Image 1 (cartoon, rainbow, N blue to C red):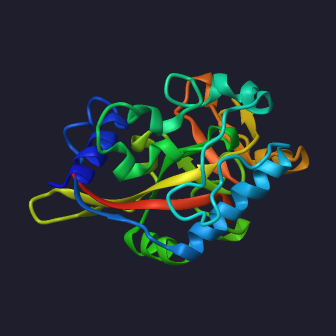
Image 2: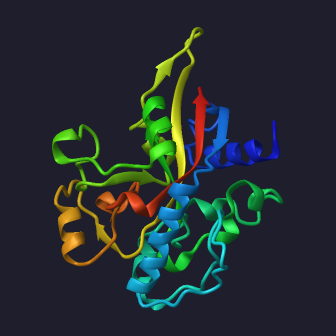
Length: 247
């Protein structure tokens, strides 16, 4: 296995419940290199920093993938920290990787995560055909009449730190021998200012978020999770990796 796949496997295992960690193995991994989607995502982060009143720091003239420079956090988003990921420190999946491997920078560019815009690595479960379309054309926020999954906390694009949760949205197939297969995306999500809801269901959360000028919904059902992140626009998401899992 390549060093990148080994690192991604550690992330997969760390994102799963104890009962599932030995089950799911990566059988295919591809890093997405889509300059059009990256440029769109980069533009969203630049606009978000200005919206939040934060100057552009450390941004080079090229602005190529990965990242566009990191900035220090500000007080504007600190109120969300107690609710956000990985031991409630607001660092998402990237805190599972930082300092754990010499291959972190090469594999998922953790050093370029911008905490100032609440950028996180998060999972998105889907089907293989949908995943192929996403990495080519980007996410598309669904209309209300198109949604089968993802109405629980309002309209938007759903992500999670818990891979178990994202797998519940994935199309799971079955191979000879009884093993299951599925596709997940590891994505960068610039969450910005989040509307936090602890309701078990909150279908109008996205409406309140938009009315309050927020950029996402952070659902923390019952105050115990698993947490879900709902992005309100396609531009605030970049699919970093497409993974095929078997278990």
